[in-house]
Length: 145
Image 1 (cartoon, helix red, strand yellow):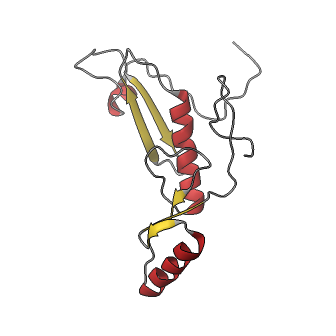
Image 2 (cartoon, helix red, strand yellow):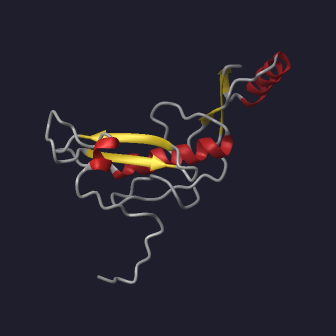
Image 3 (cartoon, one colour):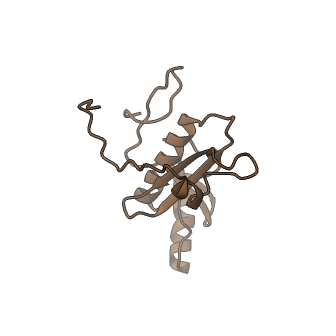
């Protein structure tokens, strides 16, 4: 059926479940034919960056999938790490300095900006922060803060 919608990524038919088995989507403890609810985020280089696996009886969390995708994008763009429970537009963790001079500079920045606890744990605001509203008017991301 033609819908006029162009899908910008490949759709794969997997009639015999071969691909699902290779990606670990069929849990033989639960079923030999039905897939569990998997989410894969694969980057433009073909590298699997994130795998989320939900049991068959639990739906996927779209806000969490979007949060994780945003975290990967922000992390890549800023060379930073996301703290536990990171929410888009909250500060990110800077990588530790690689030299003693960098350590001294980081300590000065922390004293001046009050943006960390020590040279090995300091934060910065993410660049190009975006926030969206979900259906319950809770902020998730996208749409300038």
